[in-house]
Image (tube, rainbow, N blue to C red; front, side):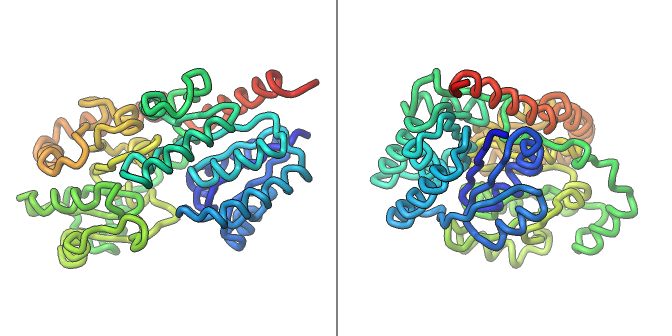
Length: 385
């Protein structure tokens, strides 16, 4: 059986961004998952029935540590002789693609699920641009996970158009619409969940799911929420605070802590019960690849307010399943939130369309089949028979 090695910087990406995908591919390849965090990676291996290999990697700029990771991976590839190496996330991309090229791996693939460098400037931006270009140069094929991201990559001059390909309608993994199904939660469960969180039963609830950091638009979301005059409205923030990378403003922290209508749950393994008790998704992120959260919310029948950025503006169609607003625009966010609260007929119409749109274009098993077909096509192209 041919070998397929998949690399992400941390196991969380294997667990969440690629959930179920490696187990599926294990039917057709001998799959080995590579990431940092030894203990968590071991647990991932046990739960998913996939072999793993541990390499220490960080999401920060750490040249010496990165060179050690490249050397360790190079030796691993020489020993394992994989036919395909497929990387995700920026650090895993540069480390994995360089080691794979050095080891003579025939098919080297890199998925781009967002460009953190778009929010940086100066010397750091120039350095990250070089790293991105070098990663794509080393790769056989590059997969932006949205059409908008593909266009940005081309405009930035990171690689030529022929090397870029968007699989299906976008995404890195699609959505399991049987798992994200609102019918799994009845009225009693929803009532109990709201009660447990302290959210009033009659409140209109806006939910955000993701890391609670600046670039996700949390500062703007909290500021907008403060400006809403209606009393029967709550904001539910589901996700971890990150104090080191891109922390929130002190003022935002204070508001989240003190405002009795803002609720936080921390990181949650299963976000479905939180979507089930909410009325709409508020996702004013600055940059994304192809956000799972927007697809998950849609599958759970939630209309969405999203930023006019790639990925978000491909999943959400204005006036069909949500509203699209300019990035970092607090007043536009307030207007959209008030529209959802006050115009119930409009909001219900968007909600009725939300799940249909996701089921039509982003079903997970269909995406896996598209990716498998791509692997098989590349085998014919690059592997000697």
